[in-house]
Image 1 (cartoon, rainbow, N blue to C red):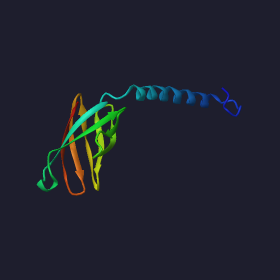
Image 2 (cartoon, rainbow, N blue to C red):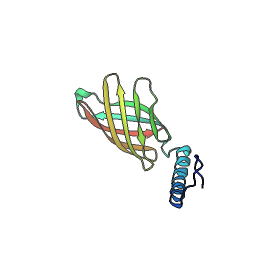
Image 3 (cartoon, rainbow, N blue to C red):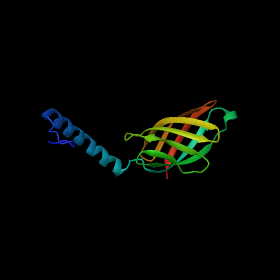
Image 4 (cartoon, rainbow, N blue to C red):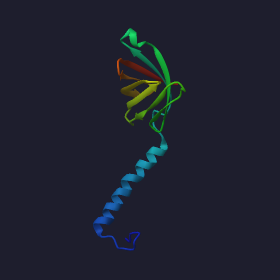
Length: 126
């Protein structure tokens, strides 16, 4: 095999190149196919502290495993793994919280924490 500079690649380099291509090609196809959890989700956020408020609901969107907010009032970002593990960051104004948990089928649950508050969340796919 000849590299872009016209030099012949040895057997080790050819094998390494073939292995990288064999691994990378299925990964790019999987990303293009989307995620099992793609769609719009309603997330209900609860806190154990009355001073932190309770009962907020936020709509988020998931596309190819990437999380984005579906609301202008709340910014959401994060990632959902193929097995359903989710890490999400939510912010509105100066308030910021991170959440962790799991999605399965059309529902999910987990915990969240901010600077002064923490609690649980549940989610339903719309």
